[in-house]
Image (tube, rainbow, N blue to C red; front, side, top):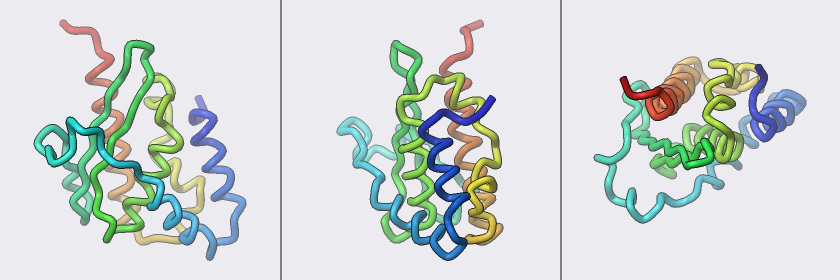
Length: 145
């Protein structure tokens, strides 16, 4: 299964861009990360930290009654690469179904050509962010035993 349509469009835009513009585009996405909802502001204890990231990165995933995913990220502005990845995830996955989110390829950022633009260490952090996000979605959609 392919990525949700919004994320697939982002992947295709990055893949088609010259290498030097990919990092610039990633930095643009860092500006699109919205503020946390009031109930999460100042409450990192209600969010999950992604310890694999060099940057303090916290995320919360919520699924509404229509099985639509909403993502919330707390990542410092001083980490534009990581914040940019959060912006891509928010833009590409907010409003997608849980099934669509779980079907996203774990290395979709390689299809974007980001592996040519950023370090392996940062790529591992990106993979970890997606892994934590998917685990949260799975936990919220699994039937209670």
